[in-house]
Image 1 (cartoon, one colour):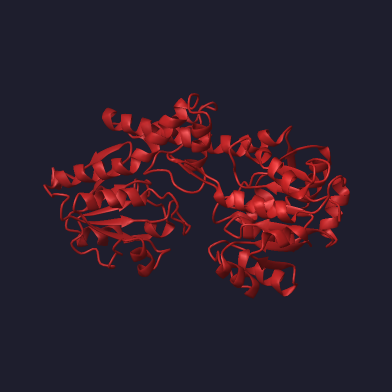
Image 2 (cartoon, rainbow, N blue to C red):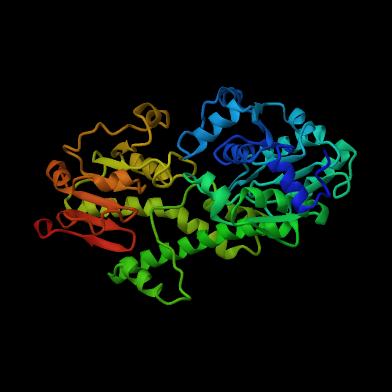
Length: 455
């Protein structure tokens, strides 16, 4: 079936009437939910992944991302109705598909941008694509990347972009722990395409799965820039907040009181400081522009350096607190709360916990890690010692992740058990908690508070 050139209504009806075949490359925490949403709307879907274990699990109806709400139910239904088939052969899937969506990882850090998985996916698409199909990149990419794939697809397939096949970028706008909701109803879909013949059917298809509709933009590069700019804005804003936190410590004021008051003015939107920035997005997308335009990305580079320094600042606050009770870091028993990069999810990529824990270990501290989302075996697989469940004799609790379970800790009981009641709170979860006044307490932008009994 030729999707290219269809009207919005025609394309939407093809999906809803079960006549559309879709391939989704990448069955991770973004790709699998998207594949399932397409299937739930009527499409026949091929899910493509290099991991044979993931492919086998999906085909058995077993959920490889059990932490994502709604995925298990949709997966069971899609497999039962034979609307989703997982495969490792991307060329085969492409050859059967009207719409090919790429949601494979692209990595970036200070060393550079790694796109080998995306390039492999493009190779497979090039070898399998059929005339009239449309290729959509949903992975967040450095602006200009999607267009750079066109020569490869044209040379291998013998087709002409915009005439024989369509190509577009429609960046995913999702967050771990709520991916299904974000795909279907949280935000409008951004789409930039090579031409109207590509854009129009995509508007129809994405409008059918997204209650907020579609925001078409003038080009593929604009669509790529939208998601990158969103991430950069947050990264730079958090870095600004972190700098303000460091200044607030010198001023002897509470940074969050100042920020919250400043944000009552409608032109102020200062973010919250903290222990560091992690995840697949915020700390990654900034590097796309830094590496692509190093001479122009001065503020972004400083922002990255600032945010990457925050885990070490948490260590510094801990050292200062221990000094108040004349306790050396070497040999101190420190309980780190959180391995995930963000509260409420089981995900460690770029988590600030890792540099923080490793720095404590360099100082000779006895570090134990507590994260309710990870088993002891999983924590040990990262090379860390899991928390033994007993706070007796602990010298400091250091909060890196704002898991809701941490808020349930009984501070009165905790104080009675700890050798030195110190809490260094990288996420402000205990800042106003009842009983925190009995602890030596510090957060970024909040001077160390010390009970009179320790002064």
